[in-house]
Length: 637
Image (tube, one colour):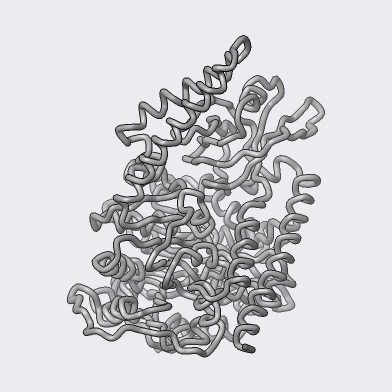
């Protein structure tokens, strides 16, 4: 009995920590809404102002939607994405904000255009007819917390069912069960990928695919899903973010698998849209009939004055018919689909009510809060986790909750409790051997190897794949005047972080030198792409501004992306530059101590990695000291 108590206690503790996180985030949001200036919200990407308000319409699912366009000419990455709650506001002559009394939900975003779902009826007219300038901002996301609390409560209360079995298994040393049949051969996969697919097929309860950077985790998952579908009629595939769901959906569609995507994709290209639930629903032959009935219902309601008893009968008859058609369309769409895909939170969608799946795949599981993973788990018999707990962790805002263990994911727990269900993918296809080796030794016990064809990839002959440039030495070497922009970090705004302007200037000088060595024609012909990464948002914004101003980079703008570490998750570039920012006299490195972030940053590069960072400040920490030695000892050999 004590075994069960301990799993329930663990979940109750999770619930308490999630409650702390909820209050922290809600309070931060309240403060931000009440005190933060509008311009600052816009700069952070949490608000659009001013807006152009477009047409309103009913979408295929009979929800009221309104189109809006961002008119400010800002190159600000924004944080609006499908499913996030938003609030509209107006600004009077005295620059005072007042909010409309309803919240909407983002239906989709594409660049500077967004479609927002709003509660029915009059509100669209309020926004469209407003004489004052209107804006929109992200609102506190109550829904996903509610769903996570519900999921934890359901797991805590579960008795004598599959959910209770998985709960007690995950939090104990109890062995996971497995089938035993002959292994299947996959000659097109490498041995560790082949092993992972077989382990998934053998797992009765749970399996973890641990995929370090560049090891073909998605390829392995797609192969496994394809194999599982030879044995099961349908599987559920979830991930923490819309982007991760889209990525795996695209690969499944390329394999010719019928995917039904619940929730909207972030990249609104036709390929992605064509397998969303909304598009499929609209494309169904019975849809025009349903649309006509809904229109009739709306008109009937508008003209109800002067109607007699038959009004209600007529309305009920139409509603009944509409529901009938809707149920029929849904039954067909879900009947044909082999993979149902959504975010973890999206798996609570009422469309999936009552559905059960033999297998649930959770991709990017190391980035998901434990509570979020329990949302789809109530629908599944067994669970396959895929991800890498040595890369980005979930985002936790409450320091106290983080310290008490809210950041520890379910995947991490299972890796600790059940090493026998974990398969490590061991061959990477992205990086030059030297770039990969440091990460492999520090994070993966030296087990990750490079595929022979990319081992020595590089851009220039006799090029050093990894460089760490100390800005002070570089400034002396090139005779740059650092009086104007000192090479020290500065603090900007409480939640905006740090900036090191001198280092930013140097970063671009170094990139310019490197580009000149390669030659313009070759960069453009071979589309050599570059990622400039900084852990601090303020530095990212400053670097973007500098690149826009610098004439030299004009021809290459499409090839250069500047973003935070989180913004580069899952991506790769030929050349990666990292501006570390921290430079102070006390050796303070703040959240650069989170080494998983640095693992992501250094493993984005295919052929060339250039780090700019103050050696004195960073090398107080053993990881950075080791990295500095690894790069410099090797250069001097």
